[in-house]
Length: 258
Image 1 (tube, rainbow, N blue to C red):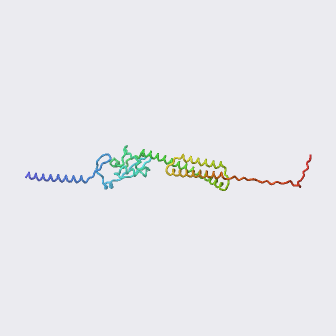
Image 2 (spheres, rainbow, N blue to C red):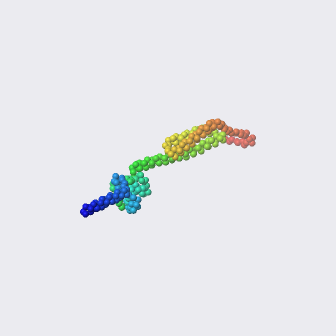
């Protein structure tokens, strides 16, 4: 009897053991695992867990400015950066988040790093981003300076173009223009061409520079052609014919007294 009972108990123990092992295997198969940024293997969060997670308030410091934002307690630091883009004016890639004196990576979770309600997070601008911004500011200042210089030359060319038109009109009417006036105009145009060559322009400013350079070249060619036409114009000599009068016989005779 004891032996039989023992066998039954043995079979029951074996059956229970198999059931427990099968149940454990089933549970292990249902659980999904993920590797945390710190190298820790933990149970992977499901979408339902994220939905049910409570929101927390973070006290954010960026320089002398203070913010308070509300985020999900299981959000990542990368998601916090996106949330702070509107407040700080920095893109997510330009931000560095410091929590407990340590910079946090984008993939790290708030709750896993010990972030709680009203925890303090410091935002710093990435030094590489500051350098890129400085380079961009210098580039923009250079472009604006080139635009201003080209606009000044364009206004000066407008005045010189009016002089070219005036000379062309005079020569067309047969009026000879002083050669020194034409020579001076050519020199003034060449000065503008030299100024344009000295402008370091890029992009749209470079296109405007080329446009003004062609304009100067066209004006110089026009004046050179007018110079040759002016040489063929004969100067108009104006002579005045004077009329002479004979003395009148009835002219009054004056007596001289001592």
